[in-house]
Length: 337
Image (cartoon, rainbow, N blue to C red; front, side, top):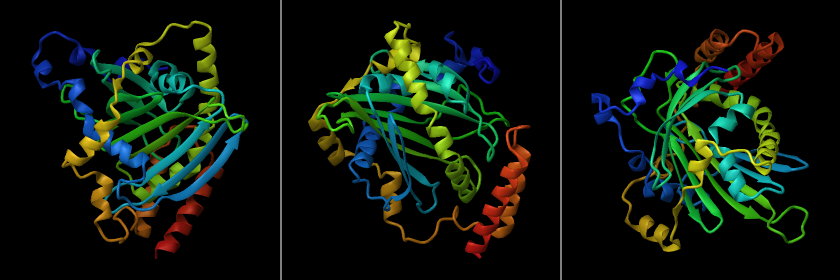
């Protein structure tokens, strides 16, 4: 496994009073109450965006998973998922998704990670990720701000791409600026029907612009979604076992336990006072025309397939998978013509 120093120059993120320190934003200022309101509106289905279209409904003995997608004008496709884990508390699931060090054990798309900044008062963090994609995209890097709000035993967990000038851009890997991936976690009744809140529900809202045609991104996500999702359950079970055995908390898991207590009246007041128009709300005011990411000419689809082939890490994609992808792109081109 690569060390985080492979893509992060530690001299740029160390504390030393350098000129770059003056450019470094405060972690607590990068994810704010407006982000909380935006996530809350998504959870309550009151964000004003287009309707969600269901694309998956799968389950295992210990996990239920549903996924929806919606397309918006002039923006990447958005995804909403609902996962219910049996015999898991909201607190352990919260820590599990925040624990980057442990994530390296089960998420093979995360190549390396480093904590760049943190706020011990709010629990806000800035992390730097390098992600590897299975076949449809080359490596991407992210500077991510994140923070958790707590309401009883429910948790609003916001993560999004944030500017961080002290980490310079590089030609490769390409940085993803538009990135949003946030969870709402709460206890729910087990599907055993015993009336006990021993299961945990996770609502995830995700979108990002990786710099490839959106139709190509949708195809890649659709093909790889279940293969990625089904790794989460064994990862969580391993995490529960490790925590039960007394394993020490990682730094990121420790920070997951520093939450901002949420007054139930706060969301109402913030919703009324915020003047920011969310991405989804802005798109709801637009017409229902197809987005520029949906109108993909045939030649662009062919070029996308070539780009896929050029960005494949050796040995990750079989010939059968390449030809299958080519057939799907060809059929997509016919439908769009």
